[in-house]
Image 1 (cartoon, each protein chain N blue to C red):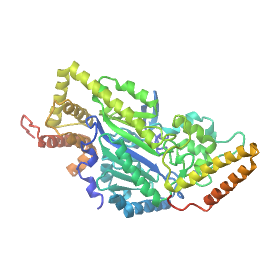
Image 2 (cartoon, protein in one colour):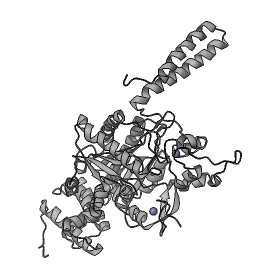
Image 3 (tube, rainbow over the protein chains, first blue to last red):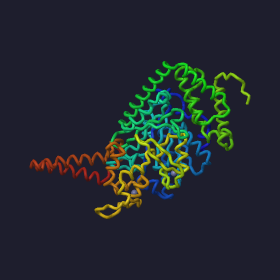
Image 4 (spheres, protein in one colour):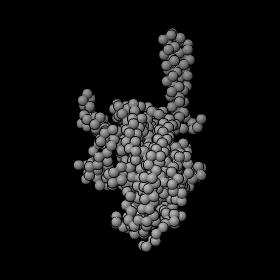
Length: 363
Length: 177
Ligand SMILES: [Zn+2]
Ligand SMILES: [Zn+2]
């Protein structure tokens, strides 16, 4: 089945540790929303239209993808098992919205998993381009080239005044949402993030934390994205977002320096405790794992920890989620069992990769 | 109570969210609540609760009856009414943009920092058409100026140019260029 290759607990290229500012910027994403002329949008269309839209878009991508050196796999959502759907969501290749949709939808994935085209999500087309680190221009270039290929072969819903027409009024115009995932432990510890978030929202951009159980940002990971899609060109939107992201990265660096200077022992203790938890615990909740991952990441950035590969941490952030754990265990797991499986995953991945774990593994 | 996010299932939890300086309470069904608590925010999940904002902005339009014309704005293509658009916060098709156009500028301004017009990429096929339309607009303006200045020869020349371009538009534009 076409989907199998995408379900493996193997890192996608955008999870690796390449690119500018990778110590703080984890990944970059560009999303373009597009609709076809002559079909009602997904909130109003019939199942018959949904199937036709899927067929039109898929056949272009499958036939012409090679013009851009891509090979796409077409995956129908309704043909997937529940766990498979959840794994694709956990890997950020499809959205939760797509799997809960009432009509036929699909996703076309490039072999390197850097391009994911969702069909019949909230719009007929959601082109998604993923890159590691902080690479807005590169991610946009890839999305834009694919978009241009599609528009040569499909008729887009476009309005002279309003631009690309979308289901949601918040996406109209460029249809573009650009975002960067940022790891901001020092700005979080020093509470500066609470000042930054409202200030940015006044500038047509938004910063959001990845929420855990009703608490603060899970693992100190935040997403910054453009809010505004109308009135500015793609280029201007990307410039604004790039400038703002660079400023945040600089502030995070300064905050890190301050912490390392003011309380070196406290921070070192915290980092090594977290490394200890990840390499030795027997029960690990999502929240604890995310917190400890954040500390260990910071430890690597501050050169306190030398023998852990950052890419493994990026992978673990993805693979510690429930569906991946259940696939790894090859059976359904209750929440407590997941915590056990998660702890096991961390011990295996981290100890295998060079950390000399002192103390016997008695399990 | 209906879930604020999907507008379909019944709400079972109340979630407080920080939205642009203010705390907003959102009623969610169990499925949408679970989504909000997942690690995965790579995908936007209506962070603004769009229909909620819309109904705050247009409290009276919920009735959807235009007090002057006493009629309901309805999209002829998909059948969405303006009040349905406000309720779910989504368009049903491309024609909705024309059907609801009197109110849209106001809505777009609020979502997009005062902007109402697209300034970005144009699909290649529309590119030529748009360019010609803009040229025609410009020529017409010049023509008016010529007429006001009683420069009728120039006005006639401009009128002929407009004719040629209009014919090009109606005949459709060949690909590319
Ligand atoms: Zn819901
Ligand atoms: Zn419509």
